[in-house]
Length: 387
Ligand SMILES: Cc1cc2nc3c(=O)[nH]c(=O)nc-3n(C[C@H](O)[C@H](O)[C@H](O)COP(=O)(O)OP(=O)(O)OC[C@H]3O[C@@H](n4cnc5c(N)ncnc54)[C@H](O)[C@@H]3O)c2cc1C
Image (cartoon, rainbow, N blue to C red; front, side, top):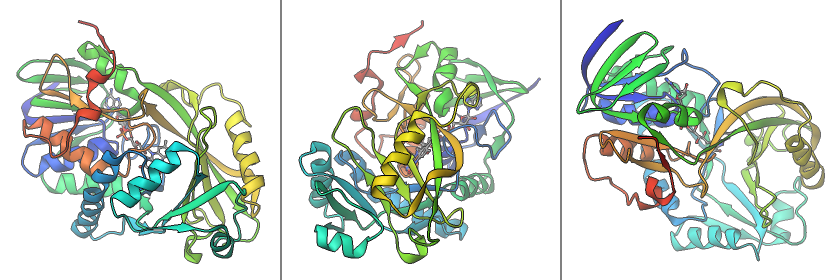
């Protein structure tokens, strides 16, 4: 086994959160980024061509962070000379009496985010391919759009290397020894550093088990469906069709969201914001199609998106790691201050990765975080210390 001991920081997990953290750290610190799989891979939460970026949130803390996120995404585009963001706008569709819908609306208004409220007449003129139920209202977050996810991940990892960072992929972390120097053992080597960041997505609790901690995280397998346009281009990005978020007030019915057809010609990505409990190492084992989630999507699309064939044309998989309140965990390990945890991104973390990476890197080097992290502390939950 190779022993290398001279890193300032080690980041475990080269998904979007770990890669952004490593990128920020590499500007001033000697940093090692480790992933269990050969990169790129499609086993975690950050793969795929696209993600939605938006300021429309029901909680103001995220809308605040998004201001800097947009700037940092733009800075990354400039540094690497690649396009990572395309503005499309986001339709938020929900019932006036739904408190969450009201919160999204007031967060946009209070934060002076460019937005529009559409009357039903405006809506049917502008979006004739959506059949909006009478009781549903529409607002448009004009700042929103699409992030090119796979490209963003590769860009960050390339820049990280360019700034002197080291990536060890295809190396699974199997042991962690806390201390003033943290020692990390992988299937290939032993590495030591002054601090460690754990951004292991759905594998977080498996890694935290190595450092005596278990968090209330639920890992879900998400079915990513693409639906064929009956007339190609009806919901196309080149025709100016926006992303959408269809909210429901019932606690039993999760949101649907979609992105204009773009990544696969003639296919629109529409997903259900929920899935089945699943161990990330068993994601593809023992599942049956059509699942209940695909049926829910089919039913929804038949009613409200009549221009799509309500049978999925392509199905892919991804993982969510949910906290009980769906807010992130960005904190020190309760017993080891030089171990930092970024987890529980609850299906909405990609767009926020520039700021997540920034605050995790600040915690890592002992700097005061740029944001109030109280909503993201571990102590808001009862957690299990295994010590
Ligand atoms: C279908 C889907 C749609 C989504 N849509 C949106 C969206 O529109 N907008 C948005 O903002 N967000 C969205 N998200 C959420 C977003 O993609 C995730 O929040 C984000 O990708 C989480 O990244 P991560 O780095 O925490 O996890 P991951 O990408 O899972 O990365 C964790 C990494 O840790 C590595 N690892 C784990 N254990 C070990 C070990 N023992 N040793 C070494 N390496 C290890 C893994 O291999 C993995 O690469 C979506 C997610 C899904 C699944």
